[in-house]
Every structure is written in structure tokens, then in C-alpha cells.
Length: 360
Ligand SMILES: Nc1ncnc2c1ncn2[C@@H]1O[C@H](COP(=O)(O)OP(=O)(O)OP(=O)(O)O)[C@@H](O)[C@H]1O
Image 1: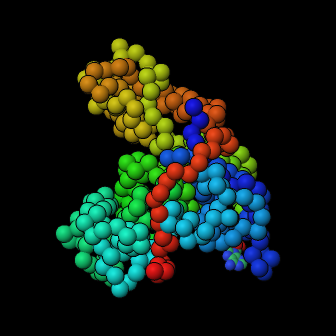
Image 2: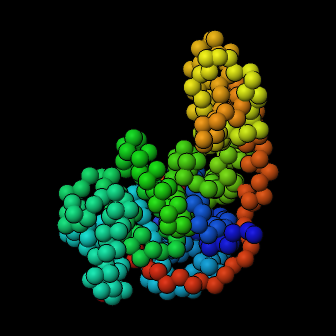
Image 3: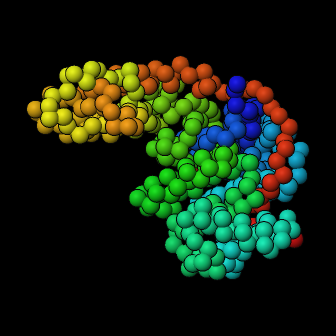
């Protein structure tokens, strides 16, 4: 059964007051529990698109549906309480502690102190910042990366079904960025939140996105598909230009060693080299093959979970695996834009807009 559509943009256009057309005839759907990475060059309308979903920007025409309900007719404040929003510079309230920042929306909803405190503690654990150390700190007493994590914790405080993230890891250095991305992927898998992630970084999109939507200037949708499909089969020259070099190594990181990529274990030269695991990323398999001594004749053993040998893999096998993965991604019907079943909104979670003092 096709996944339920949570957010749908239908022929959305945004022309700003000065005549700049930021988004033109944009249509795509986001499915429940997925991370849709919205990518494209600077100025192509990513932030505008995101901000139209929570009505920080009003579309000029077209419809945006959240669980089948037209957001342009919804009360913007109530809407923003149902949608988490994380931005690059986080927008934490500087004069409030971490605990008070995370409690902003629960307080607006009248949660009692015990429930709020328990939730704050749970969220701080989730983002790896223990309450005992961090709850009473102020934003200026945190590193940039820690502030970013508190921004994520705050956006998740009331478990909103939808999270909009605009370059959430943009302000941190590459190494820590990678760490935050891994952490975010774990949190998202745990919470199942439906996410639109804006990034100009194709690697971040490939790593975190279940699907990638590529925009070009003027907010035109060039392609929406799985990361492998976008990398292996860019739909246009604009997508190809945006991706740039390095598609093969990115694809190696996304695809995995499968049983049908293997040859017989009989051909492994003894003593057998260190094995690769079935299901390992092709990058790891490639590195293992590249590091083989000449005596191994370019062949690594492949083992299952239990350590038993399934077969052997060569550089040709890896290439075949890459082709197989690319073809499968291109043929995946799930790569098409979902237009199916819209169900009524049932969520009662709310989320306020970070960076603005709540109207109490
Ligand atoms: N308030 C505004 N008034 C007029 N033009 C605007 C306004 N906000 C954005 N724009 C223009 O709309 C276009 C899209 O901007 P937007 O911020 O959505 O792009 P983006 O893809 O998020 O860019 P970046 O990756 O650089 O953040 C740009 O040409 C920008 O100059």
C-alpha cells in the first residue's frame, strides 16, 4: 500500500512584492514518515517553499495541503503549533534557559510542570545533552552544535507530526555536522516524524533524504526521486550541474552488497583476507577490495551476520552491484510523486514558531 500523503503542494507560485518569482508552478507530495530533502542552488526558492508550508510566507497562488487540509485557510498560529520548524541559527530565546526554551510550546498548551519536566529530560537525552548538565544553561553557555541540538529538541517538544528544517546543520563545522546528521537520522527513525529538509548540500540530501526534490532557479521542480535515482539518472542537465562530480562515490555509499552480487566462495585464495559483511555499503566493500594484497587475486570473502561465508566479491561484482542498485532505483515506482490517499488530520500536537516570542 502506498504511504499516506502528509504534505502536498499543488501548482504553488510565489511572486514577492518586487516582482521576483521565487517559486513557479511547484507541485510535490511528502509522504508520512519520510524525509524529503529539498535541494538546489542558492536562490532557487527552497526557503520560500518551506516557509509557505507553515505560512511564514503566503503563496501567490496554488494550494498547500497538510493532511488534506488547505493550510492557506488555516489559522497560521494554530498551524505553526502543529509544525516543528528548525532554522540555521536556531532562534533560541537568549534570556531563557535550555529547559524554558524547550518548554515554550508545552507551556502554551498548559502542560503541568511534571509532564513538561519529564518531556524536557527525555528530549535532552534524545539529543545527547543530559538534563543534569544542560537544563539550566542559557543559550550563550552552549556551543553552536549544542544550540543546534536544543533547536531540534525544542521543535520536537510536543511531538509534531511534521518538521520543517532549513539548513539545520549549516552553521557547524563539517566533522560535527556529520555527527549531527547521524544523530538526526536516528532521532527521525525513532520518532517517525515527516520531515522536509532544506539543504544546498547534495551529500547531506543523499545521506538523510528518503527522496530528494531538486529545484532550479525560479522554484521549478526538476526531479523528485530516491537519492540513488537522482544520482544515477539525473532528469535534466540542471540536476546534473547541481550534483556536480562524485556521483559514483556517493552511490557507492548508498548501495549495499547483496547476495546476488557474489561469486562462489571456492575461488577465495587462502589464507582468506578479512571479510566484508553482507549488507555492507559498497564503499566499504570497495575499500576492502582495493586494500587486498596481490596474492588475494582481487577477491574478498563475504560473510553473513553469523560469520558464515556466503561467497566472494570482486571489483567487477561491486560495479555490477552499483548498476543493479541504479537500475532498481530508476525502476522504483515509489520514486514517482505520490498523489494518493489523503486522510484527515488527527494529530493534536502543536508547535510554535521558534524565534518569536509566543503570544500569551
Ligand atoms: N522577501 C523577499 N522579497 C523579494 N525577494 C525575495 C524575498 N525573499 C526571497 N526573495 C528572492 O526569492 C528567491 C528565492 O529565495 P529563497 O530564499 O527562497 O532561496 P533559497 O533557495 O532558499 O536560497 P539559499 O540557498 O541561498 O538560502 C531569491 O531570488 C530571493 O532573492
